[in-house]
Image (spheres, rainbow, N blue to C red):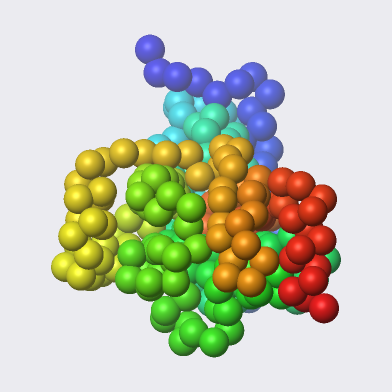
Length: 275
């Protein structure tokens, strides 16, 4: 027996609502003899390249659940935003769509103000491929001066294995490096960015035997679980941080990483660097 949509047919209601919001003229259809606003069902089916009969069944709650491919076609036909597309999948299949990685090159001024407000706590925003997009002054003085690096060199995985500075500031480089590799794998897979990281992985396997060994170990670590990180600064000495990572605005491709000083003394010592 086929799986039927709920009696209230919330998916059909949503489809009818989205159809009514589209402008026929703007999409190349005639405006003549329309009894209701928006597109006709057959016009939506044409834009989505699906059968008009099947689309009518979806609006009427008949014929079973749609496939992910059909929902993807409908999301393009309706020109849905990412949030609207996710809502469509939740209504149609009871789950979000598979992740589609979107390469990011910067952050909004609002997000930069959030980072700046966290001083003297070092904080940064990274992509799913662990490229650093933004940071605050505390991160500059405590971790790395990312602004002094070319954009293509601001990758946390690359710095961990190819930058000698990363080894000198880590209390236990081997343990941290293993954590980084496992968390990186999970982040890239979760965001649908596995194919995008292949050139970086190939490069690091070629240049770093340690990375090649750890990558092949296939250990997976959760980057979003609380952890304590120890960093040795050349001026103010060793400090302990409570390390946390959070999704930014619900996006799977951006994370805010926060190094919260574990003691009030640690925060005061970072303040001394900032002033």
